[in-house]
Length: 290
Length: 136
Image 1 (cartoon, rainbow over the protein chains, first blue to last red):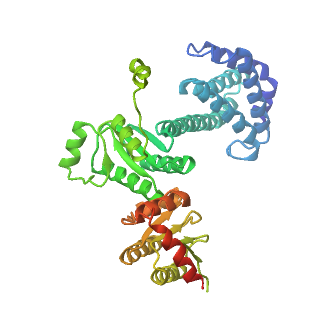
Image 2: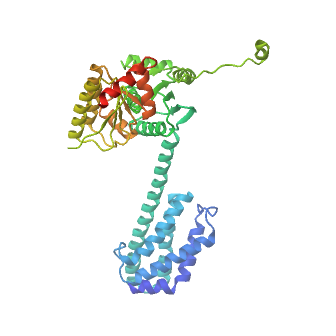
Image 3: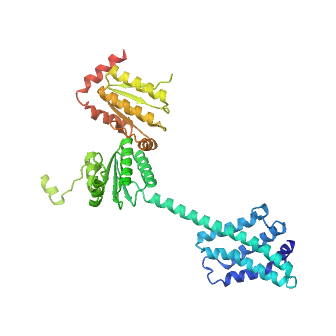
């Protein structure tokens, strides 16, 4: 194996050159996402690390300590590439084009020793295949992390609790209510009730596309939990078709305060907390007094 | 044996639960509270559970029982300061504590009790007269 290690050291310049050529020749390379200098530096580091690892004699087990540095570099590369928006193809080509570069150099070097050439190329192929699998694994993993983070963000964003008046909270629900979301909604609402010391919470479901027995069950749970905390809950935004489904499904919402619109729910909330909103008549205001 | 103190304040009984309730303690509380209600002829019971972070179905049932028993003896029960996590747990357990009045904190709970009992105006004799008798 030391043949390959020596070759990697000796011919480092040439391999790097061919590798860079290969990478740059790929028409799909996004040079807008990464400068050539950066690419060169990255590639050189990887070849150095590879030469060191191969020199140790271990070429089968890429999980051994000698390969730590390589896997680290590759993970770094694929994670940054996944975040920068490189395609999987580009990321995969990064390692695979190194394989081609090394093969080319080896072919030149051992032209007259076909046996050695065959053996060395096979081993280096196996090694680089494994490395490219690692690259892919980390690439996909970091993409999944991005997706997971976005999912979290969406569920955070989609359940805002708004303080509409002193002691009155509103919670517009947009999108389908499932068990996981109800849990988040409930927790946010209850926590906000504690934080603000509000007496009344308005749950607006005009953004909920459909209400089935499960969604109704979730709503009833939220209302009960709010009541246990010592606050009143009003459900608003019940559209005609939702009212129809609720009655057809035989769901009993009779002990829950329901209103057709957020405005009327707010009105009810005002009267419950003895607040009155009046229109001031500007023209007659002064005249009536005297 | 551990006991949870029950304070008498005018026509009300005040209970603040500062520790996590275990079954024995909860049963004791139920007994003590009901005998206190009958002894003092209290009109309202206020239970503050803001420091309780763990509940189970038993504890939920005890709270419901206390409320029903007090109701029969003509006293209203208000449970105040329930933690969000506790409320969610109780709902998931299917214990919505129907018949128990709730409030956000002790202050609002007291207001609610006063509203419930309607002790405005005619209450003065009661409030002044009764405590002296009991304290002796």
